[in-house]
Image (cartoon, rainbow, N blue to C red; front, top):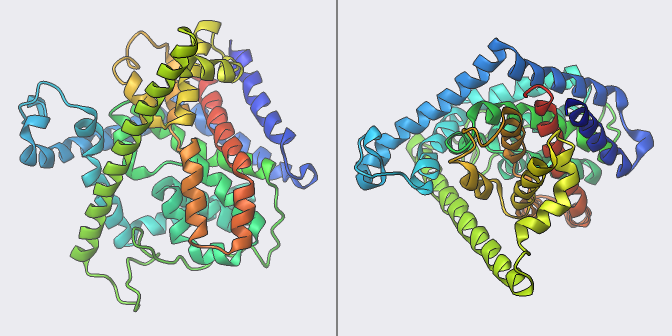
Length: 418
């Protein structure tokens, strides 16, 4: 089955090449460098004890943060938390176990931004990535920025750069934005699916976003264009040297912290609202399909559509169909919907190590239909009409980019986990 998995990675790359906007302009040297780097990372994080210890340590760190967050939750809502963490509940629901800890994690990341630590890491890791891969400086910088801040936040904080770049490069950023997650909600993921594979997926996704967009939308960047403008500020993300107000003064810390906590609360409501609405809509569609035929369901239809791509992960027919259903559900709803379905069984013998790894990695991204709307809306508030029209005309490419990155990441990690 490993040979089918290898074939799958090649097929996903071939699909990107097939839909490339300009095959002659693809920077194959850079693409191959990033591809090899990504395979080495996947191998290191999954096959070497030190690599496994690194991602396990990071996952344990996020789980520790979540447990600390429970101390705040149990103070306000003791009957929502289990006795293990000082509460009285028999069990914790999705909101308590996965979402409410965001009220600690988001402010923590924002504080790291406020004091300048996170922007410093982003800047130098981005420069190093550009040096190693030969990719344009800002595209490399942006990929690292997404890894920590998320798609819309990274776009907002880079608005000065977006306004000065060519529309073709902005399209590249829009396509890359489909493949990230926000570091501040990693704690929520690690409570639902294996944390070591969640943390492995983060850098793998970023590098695959560079590979896929370099093939789908190759853009030649001249040395004169290859610059990074100073990062601007936004209401939710600090400037490069700390959060600043409109008049250039540093925002008072506790005012900044209050805004951060309110932003975390809004994020929880948004995620909870989306999960409830999408699960209910999926149930409604299933009911309507059931009126046509008892055997029809949304998951079965999506499973048929995504089956070939799931089979190319090196799964047998039965497992591939189940995996395809999860893939399709994630793309039309979001990753939390699927994680909620599998959280009680993914760490059991119901899933093989290979299946567990590729499913977790595939789910660890924002690639779904609703994300396209978020990205388009963000660009509308930043760039001019010409840029917006190009991005809006390429929604299909944005979706294709996100799907291919998720497939490639899952396929690459799957090569080394059986």
